[in-house]
View 1 (cartoon, rainbow, N blue to C red):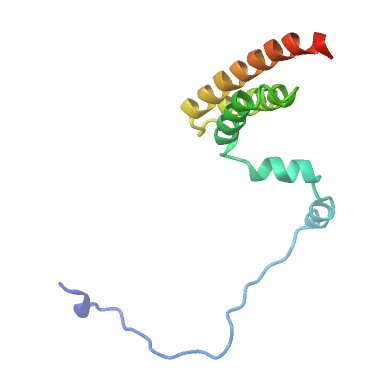
View 2 (cartoon, rainbow, N blue to C red):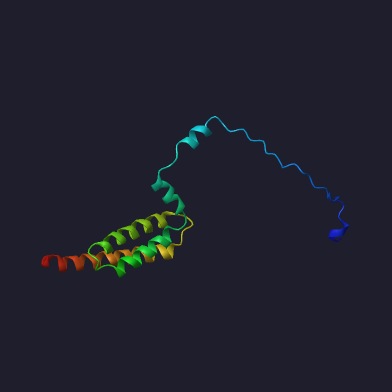
Length: 122
């Protein structure tokens, strides 16, 4: 049997009217749409599935910028936070998250050593 032998008739007519969808919002939907989540919550939700990538990026940047008087520390803490979230997410890339956590730890340690060596001279 081929496609041309189909028993279902093919309708070639085109309708000018747009399709309609029947939708009746629930009484609770007005309350749900009026309360928008904060900007931070929206940003965090936008990162869903990318926490491991963010951890890897921040960890690498913390290692590179350990000498920038605290920037490496802040980026390292961010790498640890994103890595912890990624490791608790079921579909995250655990290898990227682990490397991000390790790089963030190295960046924090290197930044602390750098700050402890340079702060006495200020």
